[in-house]
Image 1 (tube, rainbow, N blue to C red):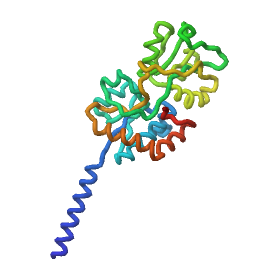
Image 2: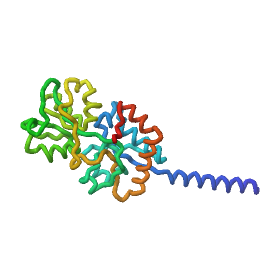
Image 3: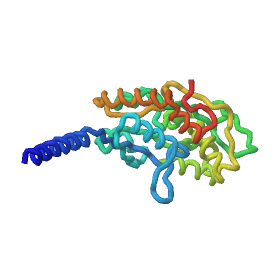
Image 4: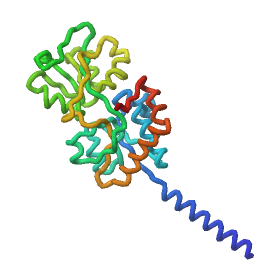
Length: 259
């Protein structure tokens, strides 16, 4: 009887420990877009893949969190974060002063300048004088949009799109003269696709600290300071242990992290 009671007690203790362990597991919801290749794209089966997705999963593994991806249209990303539909945004969001007024950011996990794309064989002067009278498209809510609306509204005709893919389609159809977007999205995404075969980068890539910020970071609610610290440590860890490089090399032939 004593052995039976001892076994029951030990069993109860072990069950309690296991339950406490499950309860202690960090569970996070990660906001992602799914329409920004090669950083995120939605596959025919509905799954979302890409550099951002792999980075999100690597960071979750590093902090030993169980993570669920939540697809969200770009324009609603920050409101959805604030409404607690998810806990963090891993969606190639640039760290800008304007966004820092409403959300907190981790340190960068990559950086990229912006560039113009237009039809091959068509000479384009990308100076302000050369852009005069052009129709330029970009994805709304991005740093490219901020740059265009800050610098180009009195120079060119501007057209904003809900997704990068729709902006790409209007360039292909000839509805716009130039596309303004993240250099890597253009060079490693659109220009490598069948639809992008007839297009090329025009002029030099460029940055603008005022509108393009300090690199790409993970956005969080300002009060989530512990999560921010964990993710910052995790970014450093995957940079140091080779996980970041493995993901980077899956998509790019250069170090996306930058200097």
